[in-house]
Image (cartoon, rainbow, N blue to C red; front, top):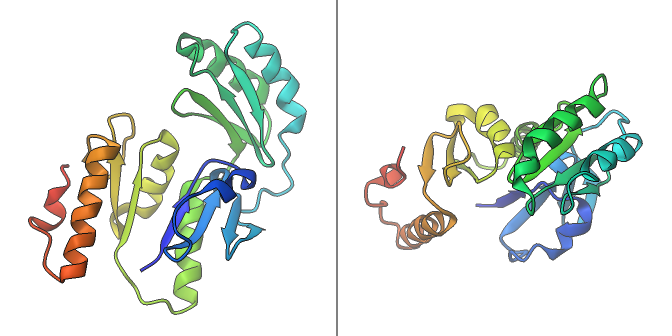
Length: 212
């Protein structure tokens, strides 16, 4: 089996990913715009030349009113961070949508962050392309498991539907078939899954070990 990790972060942070290379087939980042495979970066979901740089000044003007909030510039997207001032979310969301109105970009709410990304570039599109690529290489069909704890993972939940075991981690994310209360409880379930595979025994309760 292989692991493809899907991250919001840009390519510059891929190299900090600590999962063993022998287990990680690829890392998809920047909402699906980039792929790192065999330590080589490449474009993944095409952004059709859309650049967010021209909107940075407008977003930075909005965060000036909230000390502790800041704008992160990425290659294909922007992020407005407000973890230190969570009460700023309604104002920043409204201002960001105003700045991006009429552009090729959309504003999505995450965990104490607003993600400004090109329309059509998201985790769902990235994961579906990855699966098509693997099937095109005649990789044996296996059960697909996708878990996430951010609202940006909801695109992947919708795209995969009943084709995969989708798991929302925590209470914020919606749209998955199953849910675990926390990253810790999900990690425990993964350990049970790994132990069961090693011993070739059915998992007690099988997928019912994940609460709906």
